[in-house]
Image (cartoon, rainbow, N blue to C red; front, side):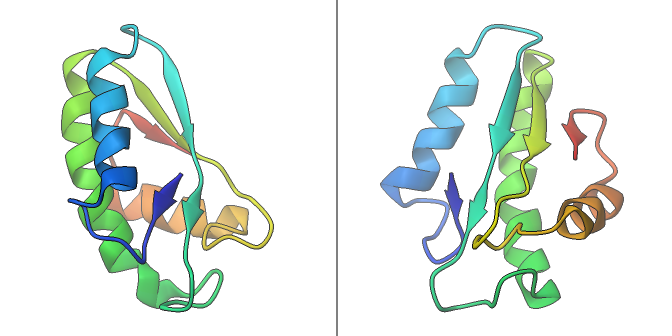
Length: 98
């Protein structure tokens, strides 16, 4: 779970990067994007921090051809499929899907 309230260096978010480094090649990781007060659910204002955090994750994932799937989940920032679609269109990365 990627937490927008925390920075990339936060243990929880940095753990995602570490997990991607050891994940089996060609696997898929489902990623929920959580927020706690900084951005409302599905708020496009959160797109910029998501893009920054995912750019690093995608750089790591690309090395082992790992897919990252933005998982829409009720009561999280990525609550709607449109949120994932917006991010996927913006990043346009072959290892990212919704």
